[in-house]
Image (tube, rainbow, N blue to C red):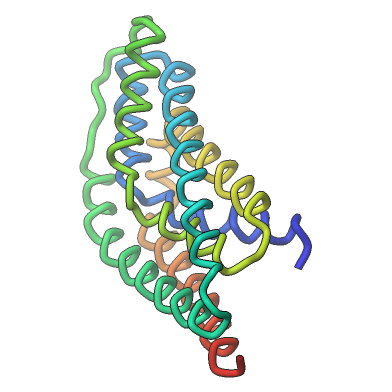
Length: 200
């Protein structure tokens, strides 16, 4: 599989898993208090750190023999799909009922806006579904750079959407539908890994 294809698959899986996530909603709320560019800078930097950690962890998983590795990857994708479906039930209700303050975002300092975004994502996303999936993709494919680029671009895209137009997206696209599509994609990837584990 080419690096471009691996990056595209990584982008799709991670973007779909992150859209209904709590961090996207939290980023939207932060953007009502600070300049959107400041919040995005902090969130983007934290996501970069998380992807580097996840890709390194996935690369270590690749040291396992092929059959056990494929079995572990299949199980992790199934777990990820189940977690995503469970999280989406609560996220949809929160997204529809949540109202942000009506005031305009303030022009507070870059340090506060970016620092708030960085800290929020660094803490909230550690061990989160998107990080687990990134590690899983890095273990599944033998192209950590492509997986990392796809994952970072996906996370930055979702963060940008959340910061700039999250409320409009939540009103137009049902988060439950996004979650179900992401879960189906993960189950397909789990099935492929399981078949490879059985065939050796």
